[in-house]
Length: 421
Ligand code: LLP
Image (cartoon, rainbow, N blue to C red; front, side):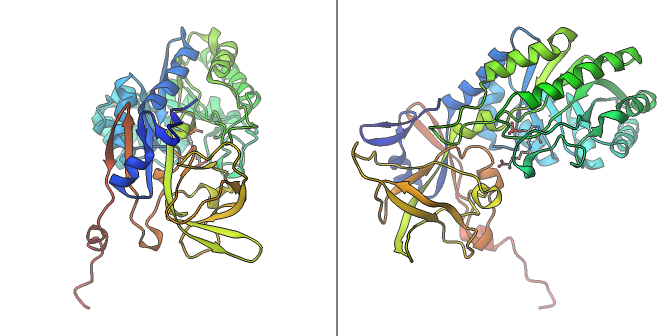
């Protein structure tokens, strides 16, 4: 459930009409619902209770500092994968003790930043990374709390570009080597082993791959404890999928996911961490765009909108489906018309949908791309020198621009012409 509904014939974010935001901010823009973000976060905390746990929002999915503050103020932790994301979490007021640092290629500078600013744990993905962290921590005379990210060799049954738990993927330490690497971690100075980490992929629409992976983590916990390690935390990653179409998709609910976690690892007495991104942010955001032209093509009608692949990359990058809805509510019996919905960018890949049945639309009409809160704004680029689009946060009947559209001067002034020219 989300808080984007038609009221008085017009699509709203909570109690704000999207047409009012469009009139003030201009299109295209992203808009997020505070109530939806809060609701999704609470679904996870409720699902994991009464186990001791921390829900660490994967901020790669939506990293605007205002959004992070909404969740951080509820007590959420943050899962970060770069020094930039770490800085965002801190800027939102989240203490280091609630920040988990993940990622396959952390640099020494990033390690130093987090060790100095405070960090709950590093999820370490390789032996070279472990040794580098040991060196950095020792040089600062501190101890780095770590979990090793284990690659359980499980098929997440998701899009190949976002599956991470098979042995051929670049992520984690092969589970067969885990004991040896934990032994090394225990010997290294400046390293404190606190747990195990696993993340097998994103947009999982079944529980079974998670269950397989978590069962392996449970078994490994017992083995490592037998070897004398203290395993008091299990970070089970993110990845729970969301419905991208309103009709025929029903991925598992957080409550079922929580029950499965309790079933597989609940008996171990560990503190549980999870790193959901998409389920919290995905359906908490829309991309609102307007129709520039309606162009008759060969056997098809192109709806050319002012958003493009640089604003929302998922359709061109993964062939992803986003529902597109008109902002003015169609009359009940309106016959659908098929459109190819495309942006203005100069490549055919800039296509959001082909043969999509929509209500009849024309120049100037507003449309909303649903489920665009996750991996939308964060993956945007300035391709074709299109400015990054604004982000707007709604709470009840209020809205605020939480990232403004840059001016062309700001964009052009970032380039410099060398002195020799
Ligand atoms: N933890 C780790 C270590 C991750 O790599 C990810 C996502 C998450 C948590 C959060 O996963 P989520 O709950 O959001 O599924 N750009 C792609 C998705 C990439 C996911 C990368 N890692 C997309 O638009 O579908």
